[in-house]
Length: 74
Image (cartoon, rainbow, N blue to C red; front, side, top):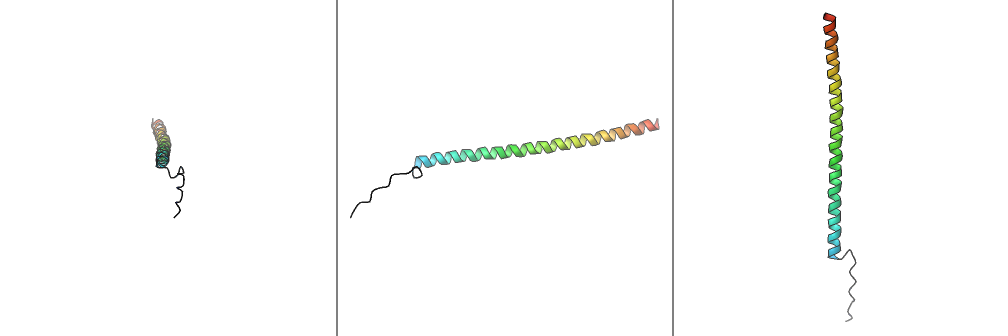
């Protein structure tokens, strides 16, 4: 029987290389999740900012309406 030569280990077959690739991919996933979380928090802050501006505008309109009514009554 003829012995088959062992194929040289390719980087994909090397356990140390696979572990390094896995670690790099896990790190990338964490970074992407953080970016997504940051984007959603910023979006929420923008929504809250818009809500605050609308509320302020409505409140100022009510106050101006009361001031005008008070001046008419005086």
